[in-house]
Length: 344
Image (cartoon, rainbow, N blue to C red; front, side, top):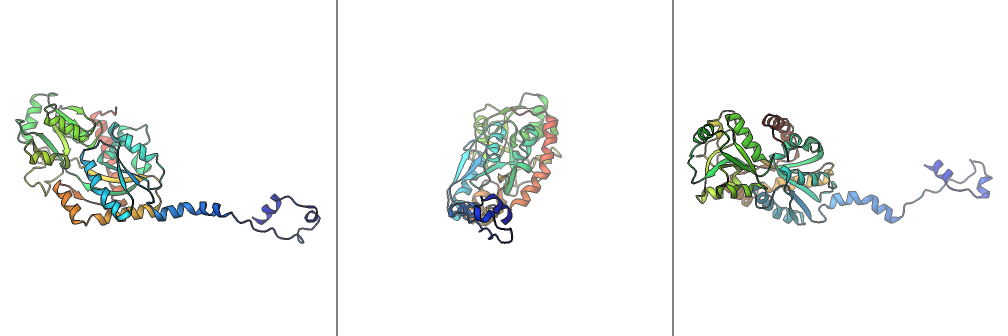
């Protein structure tokens, strides 16, 4: 402001002797060019995004189903946006390690999160960490619906969900199921199954879905609740058997596989993959990223590869993900409380 500016500058003898009306108006100070460029920097960075490689943090180990989906998306994103999209696996603590890394990152589009439905259970599992995705992250898009399947080894004696349920009831606490970590979506799917079916099953935690599947095939555990991305290759090779899917109805791509709800009424455990960013991601970056993802949905090659894994691409933008989180966060809070699950 002119008055304040004039008072801030030291006055010489001539100016001091003039009345306020006679003094010349102070000249407006112009910022030096570097300062002007600095002020313009954030807006220009948003418009030019991405201007450096982008990291896609996956809070689970390499080789799992969500890792495969991330690598499936990385190349078309690079082709359309002109920068590498690098997969950064950060497993551990049910996904909270990778989620926290993104929550704490600057909201500049240089780090994104690709995670599973376990994102909605984080507030219940880690109530003291302030990791509520509805507040700590910017929704970018749902990526895919991923049917979860109940799978056993091909040598296992159970050929149906009712047969497995009968065996588990006959041997309470004897049968085991593996997951990709405490609080992971497949852990919660198993806990919910045991609760709804009235069973006592022993949970065994691994560092990712892929190690859990290896443990199943090696005979360490009796069953897994794992995505079709991970299980179908083993089923097709004759190493594993699908007993049911955790969706409310049968999956169109797997018409011969019953929904578990057909014999365990009320059991549904949806799984999905989604992309999010640090809270406060600028709208220009969010708009460009979500629009680019939406365009990928119509790629025939991408559709074919998703379908081959029994998944359905969504890529529907931020609003659908935000609504889903609002619905599922309280749902999994109830399941975690009822099952007495405690994060490690």
